[in-house]
Image (cartoon, rainbow, N blue to C red; front, side, top):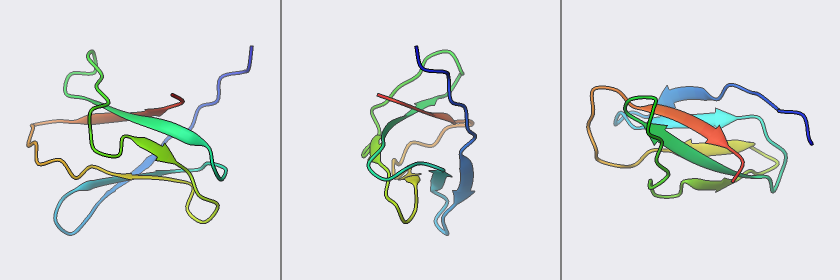
Length: 79
């Protein structure tokens, strides 16, 4: 089996408060962004949750959902 590859996405917030994740990736690699409100149940039902990386910016995702929660956690994985 392939060795596990681990990286930590960077998170920043847009001017309107939307979380934006970025991570290193090669062009055309595909990832799935999942979120959780309790670190137990993970969901991938956000708009554009499947991300294809580009050579210019690697992996990039912005959570445009309007859900307001006290906490939201993200993870990025291979589909």
